[in-house]
Image 1 (tube, rainbow, N blue to C red):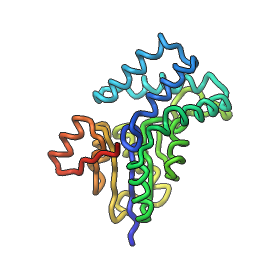
Image 2 (cartoon, rainbow, N blue to C red; image 1 turned 90 degrees about the vertical axis):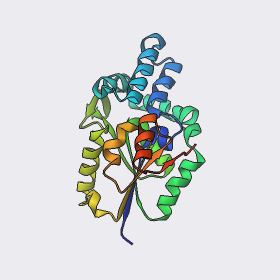
Image 3 (cartoon, rainbow, N blue to C red; image 1 turned 120 degrees about the vertical axis):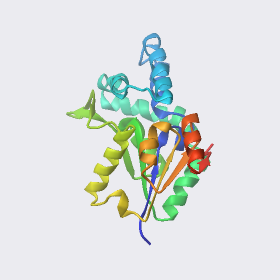
Length: 222
């Protein structure tokens, strides 16, 4: 059997919520971030993302700065608590079953997300997905600098990051008998248009309209 590729967006796709948004909300709730300074900005960035107007570099500066202010051991402890409080409740049975269906089929599984890899790597492990393409926070001597490393995995950036990753394996999208991409967001339309089987999951209004007009499956994992 020729290998098939299954790509999954994470936030509001495999997760019934947004891990990026909830991480900042968690830090605000723990008193790590100042509520007055950060709450409105976090909500505004999330609204910009949904509207398709997000300035990814301004957002990453906001989202990655807290990583640079604390030792890695403290960040890891907070992340473990965040997984328990915020993330696991967003991991639905239907999402786990979808991943398992592709795993049982022998497909190559990849989570591809704009959310940074510090937040998302433990979530990918929890889903049992070995391969993660995410925005990469820069590290200097084992500590986060607060800056991004390389191309953010966002909009067209997901295509370049995926192509770069596949090239390290000696592959391209055309290497696969079939490719799938599951996403909730119109921000992912550039990559969705390139795969054989784009699937709209709990889709935002713009993606739902496009998917229905083009005969793509529209499903819910909630």
